[in-house]
Amino acid sequence: MSTTTYTVTGMTCGHCVASVTEEISELAGVTEVAVDLPTGAVTVTSSDPLDDADLRAAVEEAGYQLATPTG
Image (cartoon, rainbow, N blue to C red; front, side):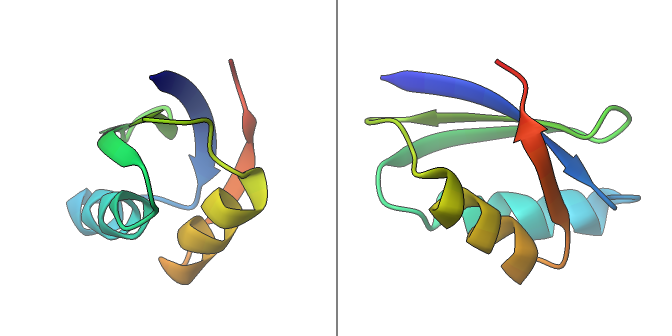
């Protein structure tokens, strides 16, 4: 298992959280997505490490920007 926390900018409401969660959840291997709206932190658990380009594309598809992995 791999768990990484990213920062996503532009989210302002529950709909934003749902959109980001849905798009990231569709990536192969993702088992859990947890979003903290006030901080923009998105913690992704997956069976294997995710490709940052794939994650960035999923976040952008939802209409937001991936800032950077935070750890």
